[in-house]
Image (cartoon, rainbow, N blue to C red; front, side, top):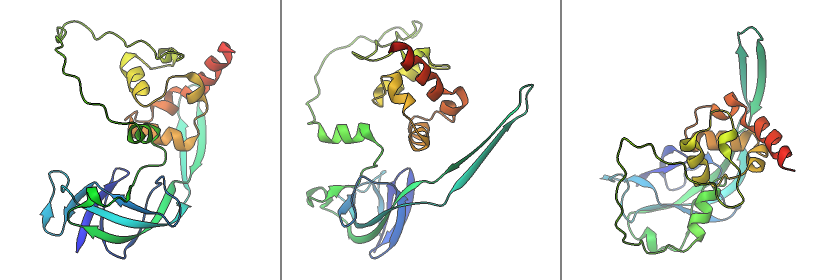
Amino acid sequence: MFAVLKTGGKQYRVQSGDVLKVEKLAAAAGETIQFNDVLMVGATVGTPFVEGAGVQAEVIDQIKGEKVINFVRRRRKHSSKRTKGHRQNLTLLRVTTILENGAEKSGVKAAMGAGSAVAVADAAAPKAAPKKTETKAAPKSEPEAAAPAPEGGDDLKRLSGVGPALEKKLHAAGVTTFAQIAAWGPDEIAEFDEKLSFKGRIEREGWVEQAKTLAAEKE
């Protein structure tokens, strides 16, 4: 029996015993994890996922992929060149079991991306029952008011190219201060660029360097 699972924004067709590399997961070597986003099991196709299906796998090791060289040259009055290498963090695992149903009762730890701090926090926090409140929709002609910065947070709109909409996305991802952005390395930049669909904006606008300067001004 085969299954098609989804992790790290990619899809994988797997069978029991297959060894594959996926984007880094929050799991140690020897642990058994379970993928619950299963798009297909045998002849059963999900809408989009197959209810109750799961794929269990044993983590073999945490590894790095091959180095990728990124070269950028800007042809302007003040031209610039930049060469940067990147090695993607990966998890090597072996598929052990494919469950057609009952995955939600297996008790096996769910597979979760290592860099997703928001997902980890959401998974650990108890789910509160939704409150039924009547809200009146604002007229479409009125612009959406910018949400206030979280307590202790910085005004991220001071970064080049960041408006209320992008600031709201950053807040939702748990990013509220210049110090957090100043500490980003290549892995974090790539993760947030893909997760929030920034399309290279972080490097293009130089957020990390701006955040370092703005964070230093606060001290």
